[in-house]
Structure formats: structure tokens, C-alpha cells
Image 1 (cartoon, rainbow, N blue to C red):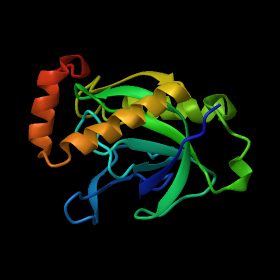
Image 2 (cartoon, rainbow, N blue to C red; image 1 turned 90 degrees about the vertical axis):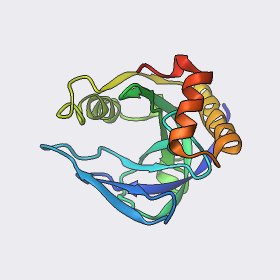
Image 3 (cartoon, rainbow, N blue to C red; image 1 turned 120 degrees about the vertical axis):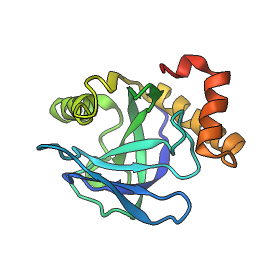
Length: 185
């Protein structure tokens, strides 16, 4: 079984109801919004530097750990799989990983090693956290394997190499023309 360790920029700590983002220009952490109701992030949430997902943002990562990591911190994470989802018509994959430098997690090498309740909470959260905007705005399809997740990571790395100089708007327009199957708008 292959292991893929990635560097993750943490944007949101587990248990937070505040959606932070790293501003791509200033590299500062900015508050995007406060989540509605009782929703809190079920995992440490971040992104991978020098990647571009199909939504024009860096590839997202959910990091499984008993620890909460501060927004702005970086850590090594080991990819286990991913959550496939559509957010407002755009593919918005979330890699699933564990903190690589925590010896207590060395035994987890696949999605099967993660607690089912935790995976269910991830699925529920991303299926529902934006429904106040418009019911069905997010569509979570399934969890995917390690090999598929690594393939998605490599694709997003290549997209960054080829298109990081584009504005987000130009990137999305170009991708929608070249890869219409990746967009449901």
C-alpha cells in the first residue's frame, strides 16, 4: 500500500463554527462566515499549497486527529482517501488524511482504520452545512479510495502548475470549457 504524505495549511480547527480561509494574495487568515445553527467542523480543515481543485481553490483536506490545530499552522498529513462532493455545481473534493507526525495514528493506513462515526459525521456535515442558502446546494456522493485520492491530488498539482497564473474567474471559465463533465451548472 502506497503512502502519500502532504503538507497541509490548517484553516479551521476541529470543533469551530467559524469558517476561515487563507487569502491567496495576502496569505492572511480571514473570517469567511459563522456557520448557522449547531454546525461545527468535525475535523481539522485545511488546504494543500500549490494545488488547484476544480473549484479554483487549493485542494481541501480534512485531517483526522484527537488534537485541534490552530488556523495558520502547517502539518504533515498522510492521505487515506477522499470525500467526493459537488458544491454549488463545482467539484469540491475533500481529501481525508491523518496527522502523519502523531505516533498514535501510525496504525491507520486506510479509510477502514477511521471510526465509522467520524466518517458519518463528515458525510452529514458536508451534506447539510450550507442548506440554509439553498436546499441541495451541496451534494456528497461517496468516499473514494487512497489510489483515487492520490490521483486527485496529482491532478490538482498539475492544474496548479498549468493554471496558477490565471485569475479564479478565468480558471473556472477555461476549465468549464475544457472539462464540462466536471461542472453541473
